[in-house]
Image (cartoon, rainbow, N blue to C red; front, side, top):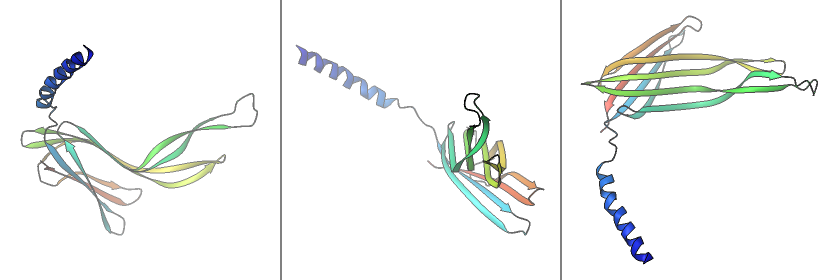
Length: 175
């Protein structure tokens, strides 16, 4: 009796599998997103950094490269231990962090994203704890671009470092 019940259950499940396979969640079109950072310093030398990622329509993609750097965010001296100090740390993502969300709008593509480039400019010691100074360039982006056409989405002149940064986005259909 048991083997017969197991066969009936297996047959019922096998009948449902084709229905599930016929209705997979369609991820939609796939796009290749190229983000080009063109950076010029005070001497006029240009450097380009290009990042490429594949993003499905109406889905978010995240790209992170760099390090997590500890930064002292608080300290306490417990009353019961006297001079022992307990330091709390927060870890910051240092490097290049890109979040991108695409949505097809007719023949154009809406690009919503966050671009964050950071590095440690200098460090100092305060009460024996390392305190970095973080240099950061952040751009929150909400624009529409034409497929296949490179589009400058930002141009930044930093008066503190004499750097000029241009950000260009190109979206092409990948499938």
